[in-house]
Image 1: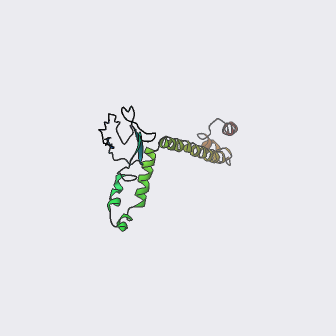
Image 2 (image 1 turned 90 degrees about the horizontal axis):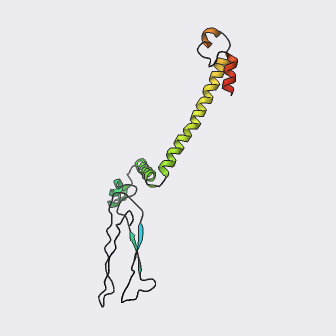
Length: 169
């Protein structure tokens, strides 16, 4: 069984003179769009009849009745006037598509979050290099005026030289 149908099994009995039968397979109707689902029905364990090489299998396709990417756009398919359908906000449609892709493509949400986190590592490195450059220029290589009162709380280590070496490492 799949996401769009329930598993079914049973016995099909053909009476003399019958050449076709209907098999009922329950379809799951949800509000989530999925592409066309396909499965096969196999006839097996036949008695008192002969099934040809290709007649024991039937291919079934389920075409989803939900709108893509969400049912919010179902009205567009029901409209006779295409001009009204063109009035749909494209930004909202794009946002709904991104949400659909994010939650329905396996692994996409995890990979997207990892990329966002690791991209921030680059931003942290950039922030640190900017901070260190400004600190070095303003504090360590400063002009020396008002050195006692200015440097008292700004140096990382007791002397300018020790601070410069520690930042350089």
